[in-house]
Length: 101
Image (cartoon, rainbow, N blue to C red; front, side, top):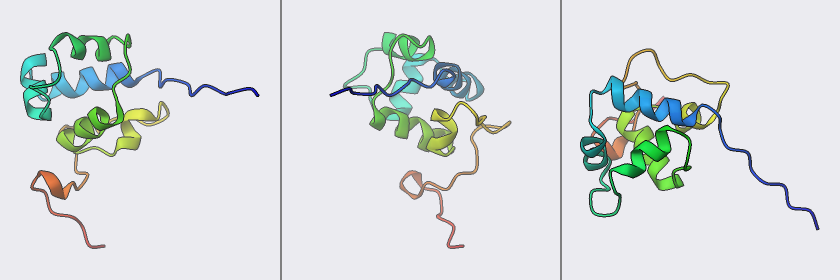
């Protein structure tokens, strides 16, 4: 049986760094804003941004919600982040209204 490994998004680290820089946060501030201050060391942010480690899904979702971008924009190398952050993706959990389109 051959198992096909999932490929890592090549631009993910760069996008995560862009979110942090555009929102003018230090790695420690970002961890606090994402809600992981009790479970994540500040060095982990650098590992994510440099592509040394891939964030777990719950961390990616926290980034997407915090930056108000669609998760797809983070993980799809063919998509860019919005030119302006935070974006406009509606995430109700973080106090933003859902669109009832």
